[in-house]
Image 1 (cartoon, rainbow, N blue to C red):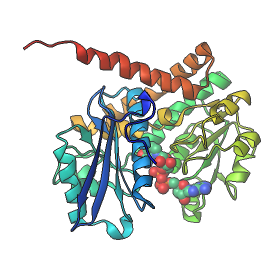
Image 2 (image 1 turned 90 degrees about the horizontal axis):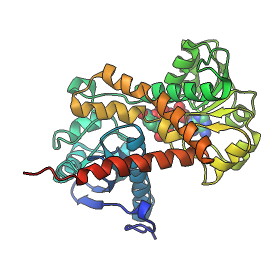
Image 3 (image 1 turned 60 degrees about the horizontal axis):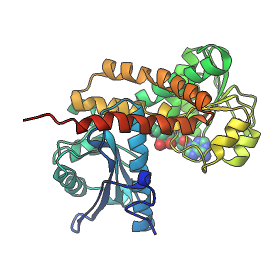
Image 4 (image 1 turned 45 degrees about the vertical axis):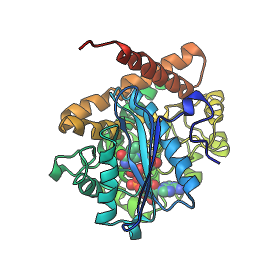
Length: 359
Ligand SMILES: NC(=O)c1ccc[n+]([C@@H]2O[C@H](COP(=O)([O-])OP(=O)(O)OC[C@H]3O[C@@H](n4cnc5c(N)ncnc54)[C@H](O)[C@@H]3O)[C@@H](O)[C@H]2O)c1
């Protein structure tokens, strides 16, 4: 049974809203973890959850993750997320999305939505017909468009920081880098790596995805699957497919000195971060290095400007280095250091809202 009010203070969510519209079939949950830094920003996941409990557990967990990600991305935004229960292939309709948009609007800006698994920029355009609190719209509608552009760029910056720490230079020239999953983020990451002169090895369950990369970069090597990739002689392993890539057995077999990739929730369970540290592998925390996407869509709130958003995503390099320093100073794995830094910003910057403004 999911505990809505949380079992520890870190798990308490400020607000959880259940939204239903029978005729369009909308069943959605919006979760706001906290608004200490500003309105809660996070995407809408459209997914055929097996039960309401499963959907609730997922949205609570994802909203908390966004609070930490937005805090470390330097944004004046809190953390939130929404889920729509259903199969996007068959259940998505204009009426359902617009009904959802009206619920987002009813929160009067406490929650700002964006794309996630099962929702696309075109869907955000539809939701935006009912709500002003929508980002990640298409570029035709003044939106930030495909967020994988700056997600991949940010991962590249995080990887440069890890290389600086481990190899003494941020350049990835001549480094052998394995990319697991070459979808939107992974394939764009390969572009950056090839441009920097790295030797790239990829794998993907989709032959078409691999082929698209090989057409652009014939020199890229391919291996049959993740097992072969993680056991290969690599300098850096970049998980860019689904979550949970770093299991106990993967960590045992890894020969790479650095793990840095775009996938969310890479650690299969808590404790893996310690195992990585014990094996001398530097792990660049996923939600730090993949925050370029949220930086890109958050920029839309001010009126989207790609150059400004890119400059902000470039700072992922400094944030990643800072996390590695805190990890060494405080004797904790980088994943723990990242959480501490995020909590520090939420608390220090959030606190100033307590200064009375008069009037
Ligand atoms: N798109 C973004 O802006 C963004 C932002 C932050 C985090 N992420 C995360 O990055 C990851 C990739 O996102 P994306 O937008 O590129 O998705 P995507 O669906 O475009 O790409 C995922 C790729 O992984 C492949 N894949 C799936 N299972 C695999 C496996 N077992 N082994 C190898 N390849 C496998 C798929 O075939 C696909 O090509 C996800 O974890 C996502 O949550 C994405």
